[in-house]
Image 1: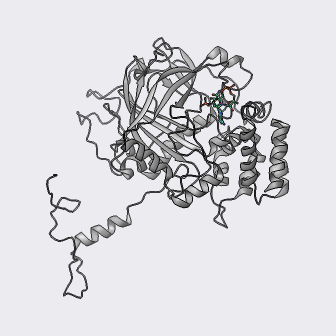
Image 2: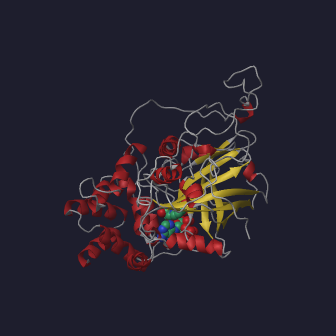
Image 3: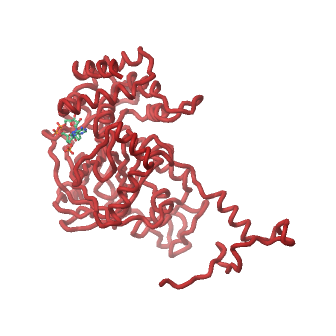
Amino acid sequence: MTELRTMTTSAGNPIGDNQNSLSAGERGPLLMQDYQLIEKLAHQNRERIPERVVHAKGWGAFGSLTITNDISKYTKARLFSEVGKRTELLARFSTVAGELGAADAERDVRGFALKFYTEEGNWDLVGNNTPVFFVRDPIKFPDFIHTQKRHPKTNMRSNTAAWDFWSLSPESLHQVTILMSDRGLPTDVRHINGYGSHTYSFINAENKRVWVKFHFKTRQGHKHWTNAQAAAIVGQTRESTQEDLFGSIERGDFPQWRMCVQVMTEAQAEQVTYNPFDLTKVWPHGDFPLIEVGILELNRNPESYFSEVEQAAFSPSNIVPGISFSPDKMLQARVFSYADAHRYRIGTHYEALPVNAARCPVNHYHKDGAMRFTPNMPNSDAYYEPNSFNGPKEDPQFAEPELPLSGSADRYNHRIDNDDYSQPRALFQLFDAAQKERLFGNIAAAMQGVPAFIVERQLAHFNKVHLDYGEGVRAALNNV
Ligand code: NDP
């Protein structure tokens, strides 16, 4: 039995009565000196922080990555340094569009964010359950998200906005096809793959760079719901994914994923016919086979959802020596955008919160601001850099190899010479007849209420992927 402890104020002052407020006479009024009451009401008013603009509804768990294959010829990152090495991590999964209280069983991309607590600082891989995305240029991202959120007047989601934007942005076809396929509505997050999606880079001990993509293959198999099944589930529970993930870990049934990478040399990147840094494209497995890295397992539920999942702050800007960025324009924007979102949501010192804190020494010269609660560095005279008082210094061994850049600054039209149809076609051809029928039906359902001219514009894109695709959707629309 745990020791009975005395309740206190947040300043640690013991509380004698938490049932009755302090009043002048039995009928009141109340006294201002009842600080306990004031503190309780004031705290209640501050129990929420802004929800994430995207990926608001999430589910998280702790676990580890254990290395099963030596990839140290590609990267000097210490978490990959030897077979058997184990690194602790936090995973947060999410839907993209729904708000904090949205139902889990909705057709949407699932976020697949990982924070690896390595000895060289945190490595955050902030991915999805899809290997591609709807847009390839971040200047389109805020507009795209507006189409997924509520209409400014009706305050309802708008099929018209979604298909208007998609039909005017054919680079979305690949991701739209995944979203409308079976995998667009998974039963939970144990039964999905994860993808880093962007192209990143690996740097090895000789300071040589290769390009890399990250994959996490579910060992539980894929499971999805049809729209009708999901509607029935949402009628019973809005928390189906939380129940599944939390429940499976509580009963010791720990989900696992096989972590793999695809590697492309800088020379190969010059030769492939597509832009290897385009987030709407995959690297075909036949050309760039998966290389196994390790096993990721989730095995511990958070003790506090708010502290450890709602306040968890993942950012692609968090990289470790041996792993770095690529020219991918979407990645470049996210390197800014995610850390900026956390400073806004949680505060300047969000990375000092326990769930976000690195498990290695953190030595920086950023100074004060709201909620700074870490002490000065050991020598308090070293509060600027360079200094003569033995403060932390840069170490050239961590400098990255030179990245040759070329070209003049311009706003390059990303649609010119870009094939938006072949890869969706390759995916469409993977589907069997029943999968195709469900794809057509899901699209027809999602197009309800959309003006005919927008539907026709989108059908023309589907026809360019495959005539069976466009005709299949048209037939399904006639059957709704
Ligand atoms: P492969 O046949 O080698 O691989 C097919 C991939 O598609 C597998 O990773 C498989 O994942 C995945 N997949 C299977 N069914 C679906 C589905 N219904 N929705 C989404 N993904 C699915 O083919 P290629 O590498 O040549 O790629 C062909 C197409 O496969 C691509 O155009 C792309 O749409 C899709 N794909 C490719 C990936 C890649 O990185 N190359 C990654 C994911 C999808 P699993 O093994 O878990 O079944």
